[in-house]
Every structure is written in C-alpha cells, then in structure tokens.
Amino acid sequence: MGVFMLETPPVGFRQLSTKELRTAVAGWLPKGGTRTEKIGAIESALRSGMGQSLREAMAAWIVDGIVPVSRLVPEAYVKWRPPVRDAMMFVLARLSAARLAPKLLEQFELPENTPAETRLLRLIAKVPGLQKLGQVIARNQNLRPALRTALGRLENGIRDVRPAEIQSIITQDLGPRLEAFAVKIAPAILSEASVSAVVRFRWRDPESGRRERGVFKVLKPHIPEYFAEDMDYLQGLAVYFGDCHHTYGFPAHLIPDTLKKVRRLLQHEVNFRREQNTLREAFNLYRNVKGVRVPRLIQPLCSHRITALTEEQGIKVTSAAARLSPARRRGIAEQLIEAVVVLPLLSAETDVIFHGDPHAGNLLYNNRTGELVLIDWALRERLSREHRRHLAVLFGMVGLRDSVGACIEILALSQHRIRSTSQRGRVISGAVKEFIDELPVTHMPGMVDVLRLLESLAMKDVRFLGSLIMLSKVLFTLEGILRDIGGPDGGSSLALVGQFAQHWRKDRQAFRSPLQAKDWVTLQFSALLYTTRLWMRCEQSILDRLLPAGSAAPNPV
Image (cartoon, rainbow, N blue to C red; front, side, top):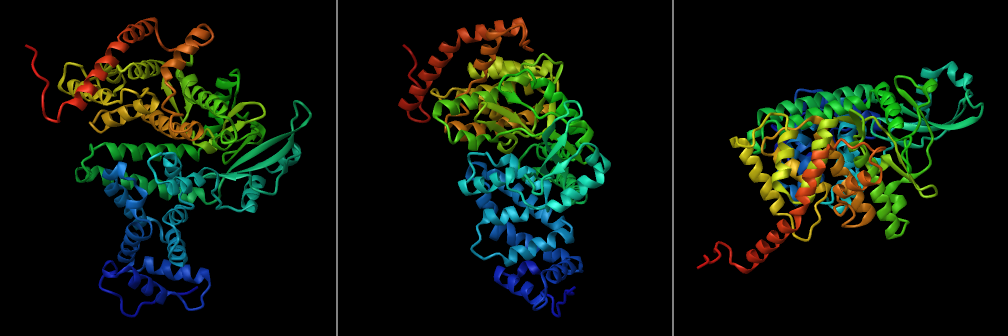
C-alpha cells in the first residue's frame, strides 16, 4: 500500500486554490499505483498531523466548488444555506478516514464537468443518514429539477452491496431453516434502500403445503459499523447547532430537536425486530381496507437482521400513474391520501401507527388490481386518539379559513400549556390569523397549508410532539408525490376535511372517528361562516389592489 509523503507541506491547505489543491493531491498519490494504494495514501494523509487542515480544505472545495450549497438549496430556502453549508463541512470534517478517503479520490477522478447532483449522490453513497435525508427532501417542488431527479434515485436506485454478501447473511442467520422450508433464493438483488437490500425467494408454506413467493429484506453488512458513526455525527451536529443557534437566527431547539428526531428514527430503521412487530400491526390495520395491501410477515424466516415478507405485485406509484388518464391519476391520489393519512387519523384505535417514510419507492401500485401496496415500515410513529382528534379539527379549520378555531386546536396540540390570553397565546393567535389571511382567495387550503402553518409556528418557538412533527414530514413528502401524480394541483386540491366528512357520512359505525359530536357541531358552525370569511377576504384583496401601499381607506362620513 502506498504511503503518503509530502516533503514541503503548505502552511495551510485552505490557502490553496482549487487547481493548486488538485495538483498537490495528484502529486501525493503513488505514480501508477492501484486504487487501493491511492486510497491508502489519502487515508494516511487524513490521519497525519496536517489531516484536519486537509479535511477543511477538501470540505470547502466540495461545498463551495464542485457541490455548491447555493446550487443545492433553492432560493425559497435561502436562509437555510448557511446551516446546510456548515452541516456539510461538519460531517466531512468528522467522517472517518477509512470512509472519507475513497470518496475524496472518487471526487478527484470524476471528470471536471460532472454535474453537482451526480457528485452529491456519490458523496452520500454508504452514508445511510444522509441518504435518508435525501429521500425525504427529494419530493420538494422548490428543488431544481436535476437535483430532484438525482435524489429520486435514492428511492430505488442505490447500488452499494453485492448479491453474494446478502446471500451470505441469509445463510448465516437461517441455516437449517432454509432446507426445512425448501427456500430457493433468487441470484440477483431486487432493490436496495439506504440500510437494506431486498431479494426474492420461493418457499414451501407448511400451512398450505404450496410453494409461495416471498422477499427477504436484509441488513447490509457495512451498516452496523457505518451507522454507528452516522449516529455520532448527528449527535455532534445537534450539540453544535444548539451552541451556536444565534448565528443562524433560528430558535435554540429547532435544528437540534430535528437532528435528534432523525437520529432516533434512523436507529429504528436498523431495528428489524421492531419493524417486524410494526408489520403485524399494520397488516391488521389495513387487512379489511379495500384497495390497500400491507405485506404479510413470514415469521419462521425472520431474524434480527432479516425480515421475510410475502411478495406483493406493483410498481412505484408515480411510475404507475404516469401511464394513466387524468381521471385515474386523481383516483390514485385520493386513494393514497386516504390510505396514508385519513385512515390512520380516523382509526378507532387508542394509539394508531402511521407510515413514517412514504416516499414513492415505498408506495407500489398494481394497475391490474387497482391496489396500493404500502411497504417498508421501518419508520413509523404513533398518535393518540386525542391528538388525532385535535389534528383532524385543525385540518377542517384551516380548510374553512377559521383562524380562531385553528388557533384553539394548535394550542391544544402544543407540548406546553399555553393560555390563549397569555402573551405567547396572543403571538400564536396573531401568527395563525396572518397565515390564513395571506392564503390566496382562489386557493383551496389543503394538507400542505397545515404543514406550512406548523413549521412557521415551530420557528416561533412553539413545540409539538415528535410524532406530530413526523406526521408533518409525512405530509410534506406526500404532497410532492401527489403533485407528481396529479399535476400542479394534484396535492393541494385534496382538502382533507372533505374526505373526513365523506367517510363519516358513508359508514359512521364501522369507521369510528376520533372526532366527538361537539367537534362536528363546531365544524358545522364554522362552515356556516365560511362564505362570509371568504367574501371579507375578497373585499380586502380588492382594497389592497386599489389603494396604494401605505395609504388608508377614507373614513366614512
């Protein structure tokens, strides 16, 4: 293996231009060396006394040059560019030398005209924490199309493990059970996610005596080591942003709390036993729901790093919808919002689970049967009946543009007891009224508006339950998918309150809503004033257009 040598080290790598840095690194690499020798040379440099200076120079080269934050973070989120840049610098400065060295070599060897989006995907390969983050934001409509397309490949385009590695884990964990159940494993990998790979298999079901189709979801061999490191830097980032939150102008808890929640959720994703229990619960929740399927767990073929499931037919929902008529696409969109959001919110269960990671790769659609298949339940959260009650009313109040009613529900959902007459209560009330008043008159408020409202209140130091924040992220992800399915108005035009009412009217007994009778009375009274509120807003809009900025309407005589 080559050894890093530098006869005259520069005073500071950060002082080198990009061209000088590339020239310096090229000079350190062993001439004619193998890839392993070159990686070894860079790794030795990173571990040397000047390693931290080299890391900082490389990180700056990446975030300001080849993968510029200004290109990744859209103008709509310009205030997030500084923390995103600092977070990238933080991770690159702390990633282990063994993981960072091959990434740096790869970035230097890529052609200089390689798009930033391609470079980004290569940087986060085998970094499950960053891959998961990329999947979450991939459906943000404000991102540049090229970046959205690149991040979309994280849903079903990850390729960082070999079939032999996966088959070895299956053999180690299941051993004699493979023969006992006559298991035949497919030679190719069906799909890969950030922490797992999926392969098909056939087996003999002892209950039916027939051979059945199934899939193994297997923890990738590099995940235990890499995942632990990812958890460490996420914790470090939470501490860092907590210490210097004033630099960015965000509430002290906002970024640290988000990172802590991401860290906790990613820990859940590698807990296969937890997911297996969730799958049983989800299967029971949806088993009698027409048009929705959840894979059934094959318990005898499971282990702590293998989950065996029935194989379900379907393709990625966005791909399936692209081939259909507008009417069918709208039907799929309604089916999707009903399955992922409406049904859990209106469940009769005391504490109900909901899918925490509904990116398009986890939502399959069978065009032949018209069934939606919900897969990959590693990330899930729970909402109590009482919280779902207040959330459902909040959806209704925002849809009816009732700022007073919406404020009451937000105070009920906040983690701290806030009285409406207190100073904080008045601040929240004013923020809610301003938010709803600014909604365009022609716009039908939907779930994305509720999401934006909750996020704006979080920026004002209003804290909500972690499960509620997760549901907000679910709605955020789902909104992008709905737009991909139904076009620009595909998501926002689906007013949740209308679907709640439709379910309630259709089957009140079988579909026991968490809403109480007084909630329906409150919503009905609010609906009576909806036309008046909308008309007043129209009048205000007309005045705003007619009167010059800063002028006032004439006082009546």
